[in-house]
Every structure is written in C-alpha cells, then in structure tokens.
Amino acid sequence: MPAILHTADVHLGRPWTGLARCAARLSELHWECFEGLTRLALERGVLALVIAGDLFDRPSPPAKLVERVRGAFRRLAAEGVAVVLAPGTHDGVSSSRSIYRTDALPSGVRVFLSARLGERLVVERGGAAAAFQGLAWDPQGTPAAFIADYRRADDGLPEVLVLHGEVGSSKSRRSKDLPATAEELASAGASYVALGHRHAFLELRLGGRLWGAYPGSPFGLSFKEPELGARSAALVTIEPGQEPRIELLPTTSVEWLRLALDLGQFDSREELLAALAGSSGAERLALVELSGAAGFPVAVEELEAEVGARFLHLVAEDASVQVSGRILERLVSEQSVRGVFARRMQARLAAAKSPGEHAEASAAIREGLRALAEDQG
Image (cartoon, rainbow, N blue to C red):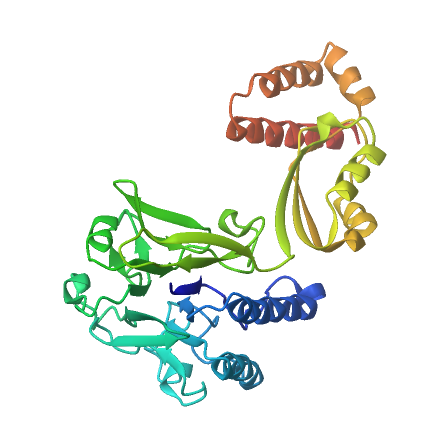
C-alpha cells in the first residue's frame, strides 16, 4: 500500500532576524532538519516526499542553499522516491525570479506550476502507485471556486490533493491565502488532502472521517504559539477504500519554548536561576516572561548572561514588579499617600481575575512605585 511523507512550511533560508548570536548555528540545525526529512523518506520507503508549500522562505533563495537542496533531492531520486511540491505564499511563483521558474531543481522534482487544478501526476515505486494533483495559488489566476476543477480519475489509484492554504473561517483570511472550506475539500473525492500553511499539526475530519491534515512546520520558526514544542512530519498510509492513517515522525531536537514565571513563587534569585536552568537545553530557544512581584532584585541582562549559555538562545521579558518584601511591607504599613497607593494596588493585584487584569495591575504598581521612588529621591 502506498505511503507518503507529508511536510510543509519548511522555510529554508530563513534569515533569523533578531537572533544574530545563534543565527549561524540555527541555520545549520534547520538544514539538518531538512536532511532528516529526506532520510526519513528513505528509511520509511515512501512513494513520495510531499511538500505542501513554502519549502523556501522566499521565492529566490541563495544559490548555495539551492545547490544543497538539489543534492538532497538527487539522493531521493536515486532511490526512486519522488518529490511532489506545491509552491506556497513565501516561495510563490508570481515573482519573475521564482526558483520554480528556473531549472535549478532536478528534473525529477514534480512542481505544480499552474494556477488551476487539472495537472495529474502518477508516481510509482516498488509496485505501489498514487496520483497527485495540486496548484500554485495565484490571487489573480486561481478562481474562487477552484475546487470545482478537481476530477478524480477512474483508474482506481489513491488520489492526493496537495494545497497550500487556509481551511476554515474566512474572517481572518488574507487576499493571498488560498480560499477553501473544509466541506469543499472533504467532499472533493481525494483520498487525502495534503495541506500546508498552518504551522501546527492538525487532523481534519468530517463526519468522523479523516480526509486531510496540516503536518505543521518540521522546524520551529519563532516564539509564536504554533511553533512551540516538538516538531514532526506526517507519515501517511493510503490504502484504496480505507481511511488514511497518519503517524507523526519527529523531525528535530530543536525546541522553541515560552516560559511564564511568576516571581512571587520564588523566595530568592537563586531559586529563579535554578528554575531556568531546569528548563535549559543546548538546542532550546526560550522566551522567559517574568511577571508578579519579586522580593529580590531582578536584572534581565544579568539573568540572560548567567543562564543563557545553557540554551541555544535565551531572551527575557520583564513585566514584574521588582520591589523587596521589606520595602513593600513598609509602604503598605505607612499612613501616607504612598501607603494608601500600595495597599490599594496590592489588593487590585490579588483580585485580578484574568492575565490581562493581572498585567494591567502589575504595570500600574510598577509605574506607581517608580514615581514614588523618584519623589523620595
């Protein structure tokens, strides 16, 4: 029975803006992730490596990177593994300099270049076969009802539809996003819809039946929620007449984390440092969000310097109230304007019912205490 390795949103050539200290290392780890995808395809004996958009971070990637990709694809071709690819929104074909408008990639790479459905590719390997259809989304050339062009052949082969686009609500859809609804795609008749665009894994079902999936980005790209945690690709087994089966395969040990720490939970700076060290890793990138009221001095730059070497990258954002317990106690007990402020704001912080209210109260306390300190000076 045919199996494919489904990935998307690889974004090779990403510049890693704001990560200058680890950009070179991150780029190499990113490449190792892509090489790992090709190894997985070979080890699992798949029919094809299917890339549902945004293999590259921009339409015209650097020549050295393209050459490395060529080598990886040639190794797949030598073993009979096809590469089936749909352009995305970052590496789309609308640019005259698009990599897909050149002969830079090996001839065995099957790229959907038409703005409409209709081209059908049949791939065979080791007695297994499947057919693929897809398109290169073009806001000017792709019709809103593009799925109406989809036709399934009567040769009995499993059919995979490869698309880079958003499925679901049109409320937040941008003009450059492929318009499609779950109902349209689920009822089109394909055995499996290999999607890209969302960076977190998502199985798509209708009436309990699995009809497609987003595999998520195989390598985390930022501290945004869809990029956090473990990354994977989807090994999809497609048996005629059966629901497709998905197995997630890990693709990298690199992990992006957001660590929210309430400083009120720590009795000392040493405890805070120990907590950070406990979450560290040589291939972890961490955004530490400090909040609450600290009973000890906290200097973000010093924290990053002391613990940063334990991470691939560490950055801290400080939204905490940094005032010692001794000073806060003194202010609260004062019979003065400062004491009234401290007592009221402390009660407001304790009564906060949501993260937004807590953050607002924390900011107000911090600014108020800063103003009080300036008055004392």
